[in-house]
Length: 190
Image 1 (tube, one colour):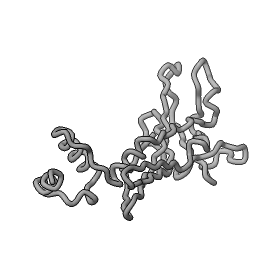
Image 2 (image 1 turned 180 degrees about the vertical axis):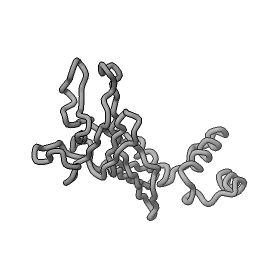
Image 3 (image 1 turned 180 degrees about the horizontal axis):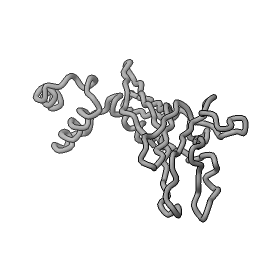
């Protein structure tokens, strides 16, 4: 009855139609008056989502990040720098949570690998995990699943101003639950 009064007072729909944010508000209000939190497929989806350990991209590039010049890793100016992430970081992830006869399964799928080159230029995004440069690529624009970026200038007279590039995996996250429920969870980037 208290839950029904609360939802009516807030002019919100029935419990099974609440958003994750609205469920959080309801749970907070119920907790303040000593009542247990509500359980819905949406709350279970959030619980399943919170249990997923999202990998970070491996940060590989060509030329290899282990090569250095004067103590600094380097890449080439005017040539393609290929970048990629290990296959282990590029695979769908799932998790399921269950309680009170209900369940929800969350699926996270990697959708893009992007590079912030660190030189102030706009980043590049790829629809896949990329791949290493091979000799047959020459200095052609990346193709066949490759991701790449061309730096246009050196970092400074003595290379004392190195740049730091950052790779990011963007995930699309969906969930399905008991009672033909489901939806999207806002995207995540690692």
